[in-house]
Length: 75
Image (tube, rainbow, N blue to C red):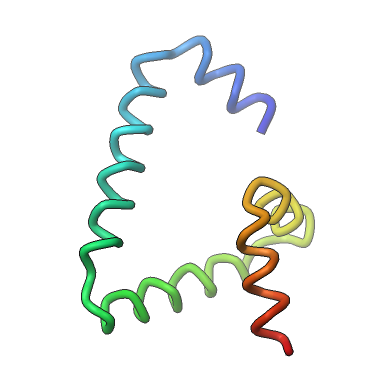
């Protein structure tokens, strides 16, 4: 992640495009039907499970709300 942040600082035009794409994706996710939301959740869960423990820890560190949701789902 540090290398990525350094690269993004060196390439602000790419960082801007990435932010726009993330915002568009988030907007589409908010407008999704319940079926589409379930598909998206399943896809994201699958991607998370394929990550190494270190990658999972990094994601959870950057997104504490996910950690709470995962712990709640385990109960």
